[in-house]
Amino acid sequence: MRYALHNVEDSTEVKFPTLDALWQYVRANGLCSQESDAEDSSSQPMLNPKFEIHDFDACGVVRTEPRSQSRRTDRRKP
Image (cartoon, rainbow, N blue to C red; front, side, top):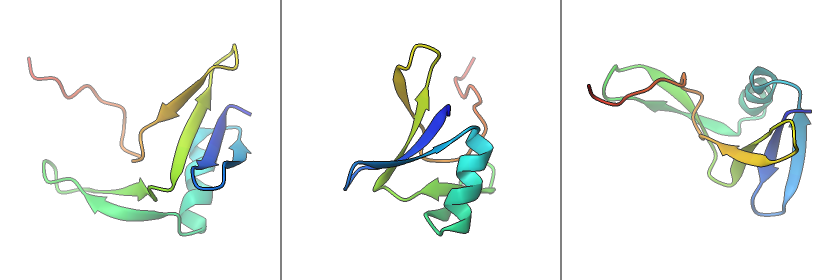
């Protein structure tokens, strides 16, 4: 499994094959809230702060993903 929903408080994890599957689980279990982005007035799910999304690369190294399900866009100004 490539992704895991990590509970920071009790150090448990639920693993998922895709990030979409993880977010489906998060939404179905009420583990997020809807947050509005003032820049574009859209609403994005925001993961409960007691959880982290871990992404495992091919070597097993863990990276922590952002808590929102926003698209990964480069917001740097030119």
